[in-house]
Amino acid sequence: MAWLQRLFGMEKPDDAQVNPESVAVDDSGEDIAPERVGLNGEYDQSGLAKRVALAFDEDSQFDDIDSLYVAQTGSTVVLKGQVPSQEILDEMVAIASGVSGATDVNTDQVTVG
Image (cartoon, rainbow, N blue to C red):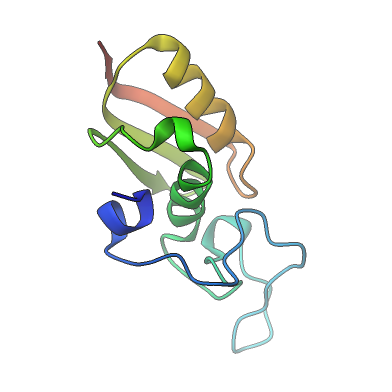
């Protein structure tokens, strides 16, 4: 099952982007913080976590991992659960770190093996 579907109960929108090009603006004309930008550039409280899930969806090597969860605390991506190897975890951390708005990736709640 896809990451977005499993974690957020949603299908990938056609125009979803991991790293939106432009700065999003909310209804009041204020810039949206990068970690709050959703899949389509809209304000989304969980925007960073959803874009990380989208990034994991785009890499087929993570398709069979269904015991890891993605959350966010501010601009920190929080990974929770279990992964099969340290190498996989390292790759996932690198991908999550590359998502716009991510300032850190916390893996304290991840077990390997």
